[in-house]
Image (tube, rainbow, N blue to C red; front, side, top):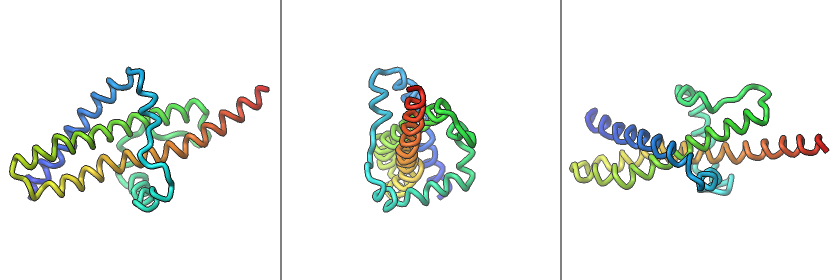
Length: 161
């Protein structure tokens, strides 16, 4: 059982590594801005129904909060700081989305070929927890952050007039 878990976590970790590399490449492409605005779910009630608030709580209240220190801001963040955090959220979101897809198209067939039919469900669960939910959480948080950024930007624009 330990060997199976190790293999599954290895697949997830390798998918993250490739996700990092592909995200780094994609950031330099013209269509990256379109990717940063992509939304898989456009309705807050769906986020609530799938338990994104519970997942958010688990990320912020457990050891997971130490994993990405770039997605934090000060008590009174400037517009620039908010935009920088949003960019980090986008990077994290795209990395996890790439990793999710890689596990689906490479990790699951690899597991089946290795005669790990029983492990496929476990791999899917791990993939959802470690890749899909972080992607959805970043999108959920970015939606809320975009509202704040727009409000501050509007206030700054109005103040200049």
